[in-house]
Length: 190
Image (cartoon, rainbow, N blue to C red; front, side, top):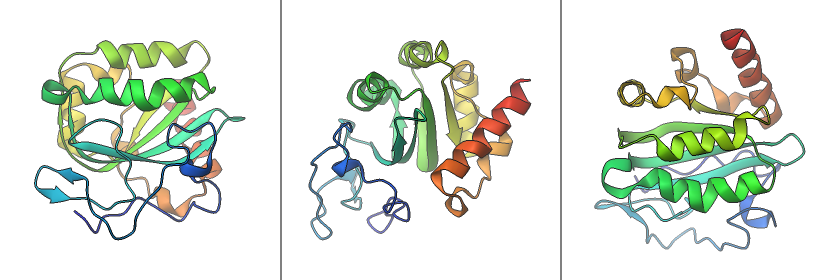
């Protein structure tokens, strides 16, 4: 797992540690010191720790004018034992919503497992953004994770669809990915 880096091709457009509005502003990174782990496996030092012991993230892009962000995740999303959604919501999502972000694209191809608990923080997140025209879209999550999300009825708050599990998002610039997602939402929701 230590070789899996967050996507870095958009660094010409955005770097969270240089964004004064980002929860990760002024965070320093090492290319060589591996200290964070998911269970017994070290992860690349470019991933951001937001308080979970099994789930890490990287804010790949944020545009406060267009009110959206793109977040890549890695690890095990475990609400049942670690309440990862609470940590994510309080540490990352709430500060971003306060800065006007209402559209969230969450990339999950490196999320290996998902263990749900309850819907409280998902519902709160959804309520925070829906009245302003916001949404939360899960992109490229594994099928068994989407099944777990659906089984716990979290898909009422998080947009999931098989069409969103094979998006070649790295081919896009952030604004083009936003356009693709918004177009999909417009057609799928009527």
